[in-house]
Amino acid sequence: MTIIVHHLENSRSQRILWLLEELGFPYVVKRYERDPKTMLAPPELKAIHPLGKSPLIEDEGLVLAETGAIVEYLVEKGGGKLGPPPEREAVLRYRHFLHYAEGSMMPPLFALLVINRLGLLGRPAKGTVQGMLDQHLDWLETELSIRAHFAGADFTAADIMMSFPLEASTSRGGLDASRPNLMNWLERMHGRPAYKAALSHGGPYAYA
Ligand SMILES: N[C@@H](CCC(=O)N[C@@H](CS)C(=O)NCC(=O)O)C(=O)O
Image 1 (cartoon, rainbow, N blue to C red):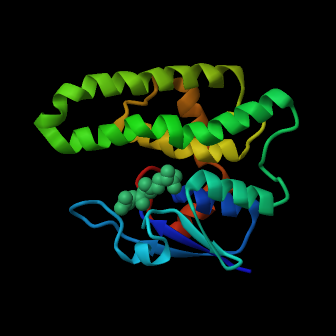
Image 2 (tube, rainbow, N blue to C red):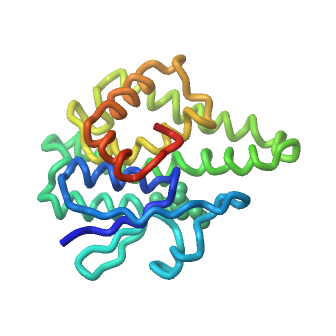
């Protein structure tokens, strides 16, 4: 059965296209554009799921929302490929990063998005929030000095989850060559054939 991905341009849903490519599942992309003024998703997405956010997938008569939950669903459907590695510590790191990407890293990045839109009004909050994000980036830089991927030596779906916050960090969070492990990891991720295939299926993506 072909999976339908409701994909919002320049958004977190890029990760789902990438995972589907890595797993080799057939899928079709329904691409939506953001409102140019508000940057919000168009109302059509609310017809698929009441929250109207992306990603959403339709598969086997189900509508699934929330990136991490969709990633777990797809990894399970793929028989565990790109799922938790065999070692206990790597399993725990895999689970940690799967949740951490949306739960801990995206909040300061979202705050920076809003702060930047506020212009002068946002300035007083910017230093504090940037400091919060820097703490994450510094820690992640250290993590990738210990191992090649977030869960362990091998590439897993936890890396896919971590891609969006780190891509967003290069565009608005000050992530640059001063954190070489993170930049090298991003370069490796962007070089994967499945990442490139997802870009060609999903259309232009501002963070690649
Ligand atoms: N934690 C959710 C966040 C979903 C979310 O906020 N998606 C954004 C895409 S980056 C969206 O749909 N934004 C448009 C809007 O809020 O109208 C997830 O990972 O699925």
